[in-house]
Image 1 (cartoon, helix red, strand yellow):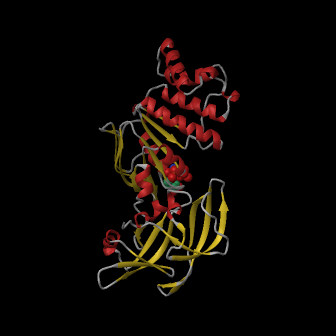
Image 2 (image 1 turned 90 degrees about the horizontal axis):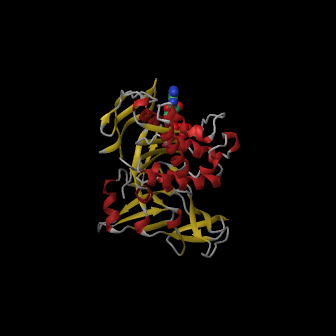
Image 3 (image 1 turned 135 degrees about the vertical axis):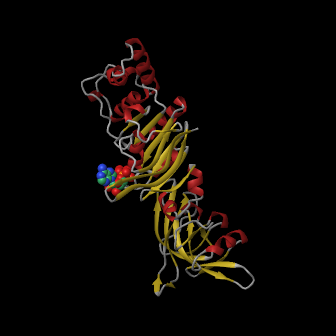
Length: 371
Ligand code: ATP
């Protein structure tokens, strides 16, 4: 039975459609990350689960039960926000115990559960301190301990790490994944940060404009993005996408023209192009899948950027071509090299290539994946 399900769920604020016919099953016990750019509707979707936003149409199920009209406090879930909202005059122990106290749990049980929650989050030595005496990361862990002490079935988290510095964020990310394993509860986590999504989620759901673009494991979304939006959003630096013209030869072969280059497609990719609308496609290649050498795509090196362990090379594709009466000049692409690869020089003319199985093809008109 799924943990949480959106069934054609829509949320409108007057004429703004924040969440648009969302259908998504979050499995019991999974760590699902809702990710997307600012304004895509991810916080609203999370708040709909919590019962903090009314569902305009459609339904929301928790544990298979329709909770669309159930009050927030009756939904057996805990929400952790970006701001920790701890009680400043209470100690860490009192803060963690608070949700139990307000539910009239007896003192001895409260103490035991608070200590267990504090222990899980490495707060055992800080129980008598007050929030002002803690670091940002420690405060966020107190907020987490306060959420888990109630032992809810579903945890909702809205950018809980965004106030932390980079190092603490990486550490807390790992702790949250561990906590998820230990508790076995359902985690639904909102972030705009695709690295957080990729590293923490057992699955990630990518939203844009209130609509679900794709849901899958991090590998599925990275290796087979469903459309150009996902291709550009997941991955850093993002996937290179360039326009290509499709040439069909009389013997049934298919080739792509990119800049001055021409690439014969293997049969499997060629078949996927049969549905391409106007014979023009967008070719996508991840920066780490482009090789600099004797490849068929001519380019000029514009920028060489060393990051220590790797190198980013920005290159401009040679040649111009006409598209809808416009002259389209050389697109810029990024090549990600290992620091051990020989470095090209700025201004050098090079040939780029990619393995056919690492090339993604998208319909230029709809943005949908073809292959
Ligand atoms: P961010 O990462 O910036 O928080 P988000 O992806 O979480 O963005 P939401 O906060 O869910 O996006 O907002 C989705 C859309 O709904 C936006 O266009 C936003 O302006 C609108 N919106 C959200 N809350 C309200 C509200 N209370 N009243 C009116 N419009 C709202």
